[in-house]
Image (tube, rainbow, N blue to C red; front, side, top):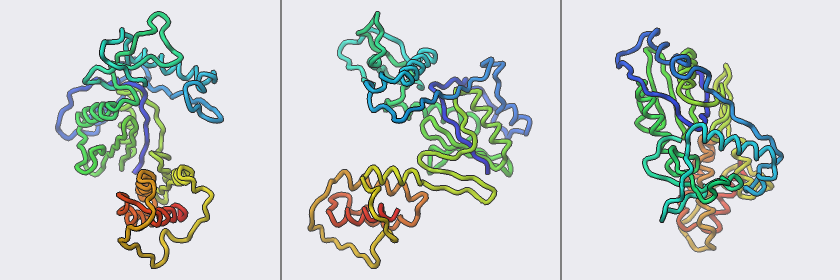
Length: 321
């Protein structure tokens, strides 16, 4: 199975079409997924994102405004908002507090003008969003509505266990599409279907094509003739640093040999937010490290009122990593 990954731009530009419901032939499949630039767009819509190279990313707007590269990047982003008709500058409405912070919104949302880019003619105006902006709680749902509508119209069916998974069968072959907000990975047992789907998506969206998937949501993927191998090495380093354990000595097992935890909850209570956070970080890691599943699930039972001895055992799992 071949797989690829794409990351979308700021806006959706497809126009839904009516598609027949019978099983398509090879020629019909080509027509269905062919890019139709001349008829609908008149050119290649894909735009590679700007990459800003810096020794360290700014931590706030004040730091960003001292770096010409970041200023240029922010200007480009705001210009793309204007080009894609994301928002419109309007007088601030009464009794509504604008957000300090694409996809169609079902309610009116107002945001403040970005710091450092205030309109000199209308400094007190705010932006009224026409489409969902990154950072809004409505944004993931808006993206999902757009995605599911498009994919279902093209005869993919939604997974019953994972609603973010879409599948389409072609006789002896299969096309699988998985969506995460505005990122998508897809693959097929037939490389031709992978390319056709890629062309089809580029004709509907402004997006960046990442080619064969090598990294997705903290998961490294290595595809070779010998198989598909995954690891989360970078993620492990990140969580060790997050919890201040990158200098701890490693251990050979995730739990003490013949270790037993009793139900005795007498002990010093620990941070009731840090403990569940550490458990959650380990749970996400179990997809590529099944050898920590038992220990992680065992100590996950004590998240309500964790005590010091249980935190010590959780830290041991981190040392094992």
